[in-house]
Image (cartoon, rainbow over all chains, first blue to last red; front, side, top):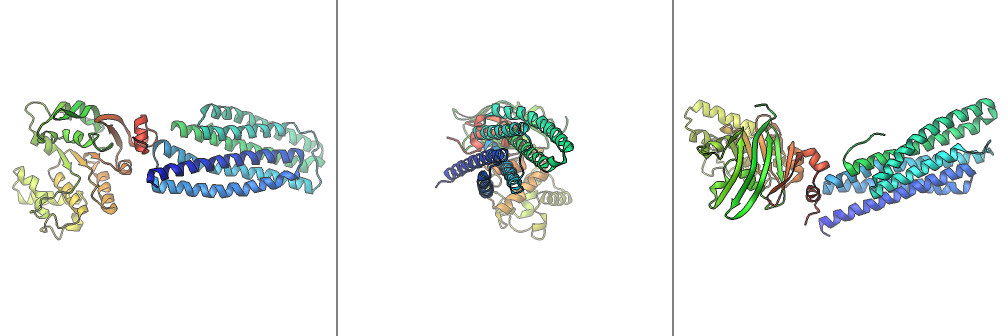
Length: 219
Length: 255
């Protein structure tokens, strides 16, 4: 195989792996959020599986990128694509890891026979936003679509303020009734993890801007 | 003239081989005390372009140059300018090391000084030592200065040629693929040298090795079919070039 063809194949393979990691991140967060909202243990195993697969893919992707850099010394658009991929594999991995943490909270809640002490409103909202942000960020990266990165930045601000609201709201429930504390802490953690996931989606969007334009943005 | 202003500037520079125009309307300002790399595919006019900068192009029969080449603001092609003076101020290093085969290491370096009428032996001695030190060759040859200039390794020969060029204290050094015949260790020595040289000289280097351009040059020019396509800071050119054509060339998606 000619070196040029090999290079192109390696770049294509990298694209496929990034696509795979993106899909895994999306699926993991969607399932984890649902497992917590419905307290549905049947989804937990799949999230754990995704976490393992995402990590395996991360390692392979990193190796592939190091090989590309060592053998082909990419420049210009290729350089930005390859380095951006290297950075955001970490974001993908972190997103899946937080999804696993949320699924494990579901497990603990079920193991202690706890229930939601209220009808959940804000948590489904923040999880819906986080899921959309991950969706949009992954698509913006894969398609190089900067309109989608803008949407991510808009959602990021909303997620931040919603997280603050949830924090205060849950705190109030816990102060009202100490029986709510254990479950209240779980809400705090889940909301916090979702906020972190949204933040990683935002990182992916920022990196995508760099990949497309060569300019760094900080949201 | 300030340190960072143009040392060499070309205006609408055209160069011909017979009726074939090899360099087309190049306008460029090369900064003093910087290294500037010129990249581009074979036959794009890079070597011809730099050979216009010290009037070496015209030594080939049937060639012609139009436009201006300003060395510190003075056109080197103006009537009354002696090409030999120009070449003294603008030295050149070639692709293959070309020391004088029948001369010793010492005499290779001293040659330019003697040609310029210098007879003072102590001064010549001093300049030879200084030049060999500047070319990072002194420690390797100081006990062997009488050996033939071609008895040393290729990398050493190339540094000897650099020392020879520097002995007459030029202001600009043109290098045409100076490392293409050298192994990676000799190459990195020359690259280190270029890095040091730009403190005192203006260096213009033609290279096919893009990593070399990225390593040694502050500015990089990309030429294609005789035209200057992009001239930009090296980091910018290799990270985020402005021109689509540059992008395609440096990423290997060309033709």
